[in-house]
Length: 201
Image (tube, rainbow, N blue to C red; front, side):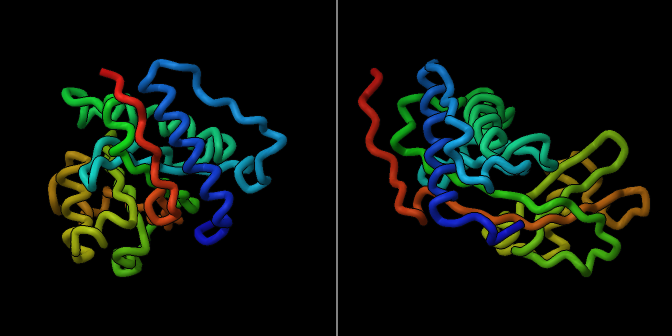
């Protein structure tokens, strides 16, 4: 649940994400932390997203909506995916040369709840998953806040640009909406500025 991770636990996860991204981009072995030394909160099942930005420009964002294993493992898995598997950047993938410019953010998710009334969605607090037929799309809570969207804009953009649905699909009875909250924390706010990586030219 949001607000449940201590500052030290957040730092451990961000360092783990940084070490993972650094390893995968340099084609090294992924980190394998000693599980019994990790705080209990990080060993519990958890769902998260890992976001990579280069001076504010998105460079990758991948996550899992439902917990399938320990939170620390989800961070490693999603850090690899954000750095190498985000289809939006398949023609311009993240490179090792960018490492000292990349800022990493983690969004630790609460379990999803079915939205009964769209009025229950609070912009900036709730993220939303939309599902209709075989199409799905998700926006994290901070997306609407960062773009200054209203609830209608948030849902319209989600349907049209993330799920490939009609812009007003969220109004239709066959469309399912699920909300969740996220505890969002990043390297910049916690003072974990990455050290400049050696040039790999």
